Length: 296
Image 1 (cartoon, helix red, strand yellow):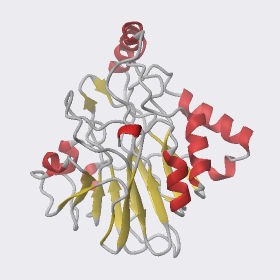
Image 2 (cartoon, helix red, strand yellow):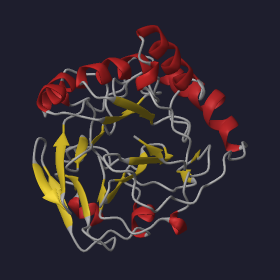
Image 3 (tube, one colour):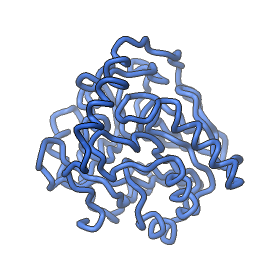
């Protein structure tokens, strides 16, 4: 894990970057109205051999296989501290059906949101990285499973593999004992990779060499954080990671929901589409609309 740990020390110039973030990003977003219209989830099973991927916002996805369903990094918060949500959730929490399994990539507040987790019904419980089980054990789940990196198991007829990332897992200050990463969830016919949070690193080649991935949910935003740390990918790096994974399709995430960085909110998607076109990958990149199921 040490080679993939981003650390918590800010880079030089963090004061200037924080000033820009507060003045030009944080303060204006407080006064913006939320955009978008929540949708009702499509509850029928997806077509044979397909998975239905529904973006709720940020890194939250409702994924349906033919016989099972999972929820990644659920977050219905309107506020993350003083950061306001920019778009309504694609599906309201009250409209979410029971799922088989919840998976949380790491303990950061925008990914492990306790209030959201309390409102979810999951037949077979929740999976979190090693060290984060205590954060969710009192949230109403019948089963809490901690997984180490590269550990895998069978849950609800689905194969789950916990994959590495280049990030960090502390929830408060220096509680660096918590792991972090992504997940591959696979039925007999379809596999979905949720990257979690990550900077670009060599681990994507390792994951791609080991696994056959049909759909990759890849973060493309928050690449100019006020701290200046190397903790998130920009759109071009996300496309490189996607190519190294060898996945069939890419669905972007981690943009347009919470203002967490200095880049303009529309820039990540614009850069992604331009670079995908330049690389001849446009047909493999599927842009999600919140709440609308993509049958992939």
